[in-house]
Image (tube, rainbow, N blue to C red; front, side):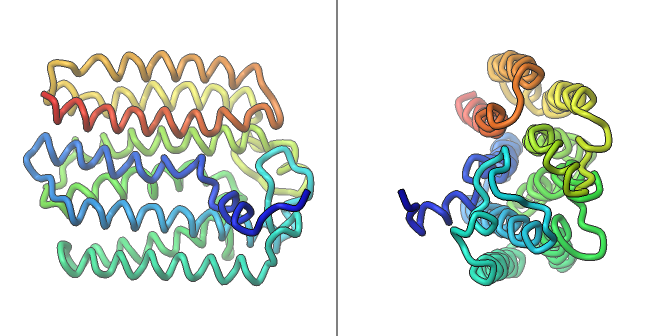
Length: 294
């Protein structure tokens, strides 16, 4: 049975990973509520920028991995539209740059209205990071730096800039909390690379999972979750008497997912990737709702 064109493009967006972008902005909005810095319009524009940037990154990853011969049909992960022939390489390349261009346009409007000049530099670095993840002279995802890139581009940048664009001030507490959110996001990539380690090794893609092995990646996944909780907990303590409810639920969910990671392999890990992203989103949304209700 043939697949519809719309379904192929939706799958290429990798919807199950998009909560990573949403979570960072929601957590920053929660910080804005706590410190009386919340502003709807910049928060909404930050969310749009984050989603467009991640979709562009997903498109670029599919196109450039195909171009480099790093994808093969029938892989364990989600179906790759370009590799399987569902989407032409030219169409994916156009979609990559169109989506990235839309993200840049939103970012320019955002900084022009609410930001400072140096934020343009951060925006340029983010756009370059979208591409550098999969292509360029030293693709980050091919050399074991993908997880570090996620911490920076899906944790530190979105949390710090969203909060500051709403009128907040930078501080070590903000950087620590943003890094914690980044560690949660990195765990989504840990699952992805854990699952794909054999396929990546076969084509010479040196992800962190290929370099360190699955046992080490499971330990990193576990450690990331606990460290992320420690780094993001101080704002809860300062903001709400109900601070313990969502963190305890997160801890239980993370422990369960860590156990499942060590017991599953191949395509059976696909749902775990989405669950990891959703746990991150639930944590960020829980923080926002808790501080609103406090």
